[in-house]
Image (cartoon, rainbow, N blue to C red; front, side, top):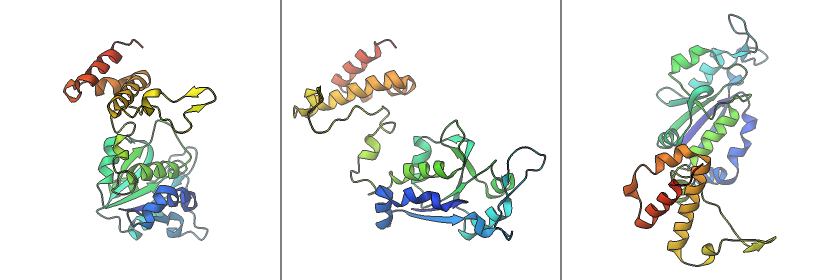
Length: 246
């Protein structure tokens, strides 16, 4: 998958060149190209923003440098995402949709945003990572890239892990433990070292249900809507957890 990122601050994207994403890039699974919007400014100081028409605080990124950056990556007929607090909240469905693309262009805003004509002309979709405002679109863009990349084949070591985890499974993730079995008087639950995989899976299911009902009751209610998906043992656990009052 090829991802073009248009930004005023390409130096901020060091994290996407390391760890799992870095290894994915080395395997040519993902190709992240950074484009500095300032390079397309006609101003001698590479200025890419100006005061907004109609007044108001802050500065607005100008259309011309962004147009130049988009044209330089041949963004015509490609999916373009603008990281914006007024956009649709990013969720599993949106991330899955984007992971199916061969190419993606991400525009990072800054200051008070970008000239609206950029969004209108290029038919850009606005996407948000939450109901809060950051200083720019770079951090949200990295969140989007990481979320999408981990769904690509062979990016994660375990092909099933991306879909087994919290949110993707429909439940929050159960508690995890590793060595040693006893630490500062706290023990790993005995069932996890029993070797009985059926009991282990039922324990994980129960703990995930408990956490989800406690922290995300909306997800819990959605998950238990389809009782036909559960085995007899799972159905009994669902019934038990459903009776617990908040």
